[in-house]
Amino acid sequence: MDKFLEYVGYSFLRAIGRALPYAWADALGMAMGRFLFSVFGVRRRVSMDNLRHAFPERTESELRRIARDAMGNYARTMMLFFWSSARDASSINARLHFVNAHHASDAAARGRGLVILSGHFGAWELFPLAFATQLNLPMTIIAHTQRNARVDAVIVRDRNRFGNRIVTMEQAPREVISVLRNGGALGLLGDQSGPKESLFVEFFGRPCATYRGPALFSLRQGSPIVMPMMIRRPDRGYDIIIEPIDSSDLEGSTEANIQTLTERHTALLERYIRAYPDQWLWAHKRWKHTEYFLRQRHVSRLQADARAS
Image (tube, one colour):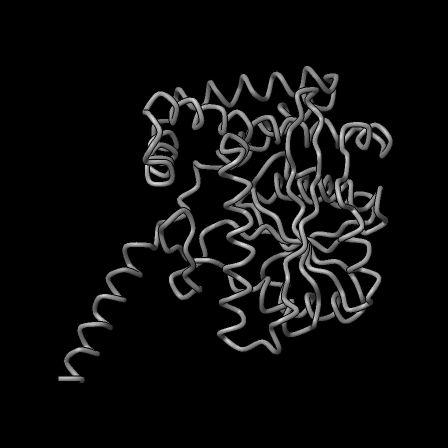
């Protein structure tokens, strides 16, 4: 029953987003997000804790405003995703403008496949639609399966538009190689916490578990990485800035090279978040394995000192 009610609630919000004009869907999403920030204490606490570590120089009122608006950005992204599911390519693209699109087109033209890596930043659900329709680069997107099967089916259907294709994390190992070997584009969001066994890289001054997949796929297949960073404009549209990640000095998929390339794309994401902090998803427990890593590192150092003595 709970999952059925969840599906009904999702369908209701989706119907509203599909029916509203763009500006109304955007404004409603922002209002909903700010309301959710006021009532969901757990996510508010997670956001504030993350922000205090990331921006220790800012006041509590500044951090609270960023956290509130970031939750608003999350909800408006969902409402605009709903809105886009009922619109054609020209209506969607009227709101989205590429900057430095040649970085993606030139990289794809090499025929070695393309890794399109981004994060939960800006209106992240919309950039695959723009890649497919404006750049003729539909992508195979690696995504987590939602716990609610009915909701998941609707999300997958809405994402699988204009040639884009969703594959699950379980399908990813075999799909990734096929896509890149055939010169296709692979879409990933790489900013959620990986498991404890992941690579740990510095992100806002703290080590955090980060998926090694994007760097591994790129180096193993010789596929370049580009990062589309979506910046909201005052007119409610978005600029999609394409940033290439240099790997020309990295030969082979060694652990050291994977670490270096992961650090590079993580550093670029941090640079954009610092510039536009209210457009990132601070409510996620991005650093949930940091204490575990620090303890393990401390133990390793003690053991090394003991062996040396």
